[in-house]
Length: 102
Length: 49
Image (cartoon, rainbow over all chains, first blue to last red; front, side):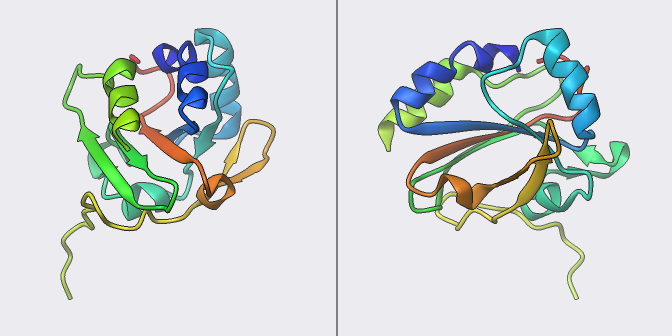
């Protein structure tokens, strides 16, 4: 999500860490991140699909996770969830607005 | 036993995880205690977004 990479400073200013998760390997992440320009937040590899299953976003058809955003507050509680259908992407402005409500 | 997939709701505790990032470094959710965290799940590298 290059759209978020460009906004990491705005999230940092709101005491917020951005993390990306997919089921790809770190080697795939490295190539993809370089190719699309993601360098300001970590891309994590859920190769065992454990996080996908714990967060209820496992997508059996692709043995991957579906697209979804979770906002976790300082105390470790989930405060906002958004799930996306085909062709839908998370909007950094909208997510940042949710962060600022905390 | 239910086979229904787990669903998280607003107000639930976020499940912790420890996953590898580029360079094979471990990153855990609990590393960021005291900060808010935005977790972006995306299907696969090389998909739009």
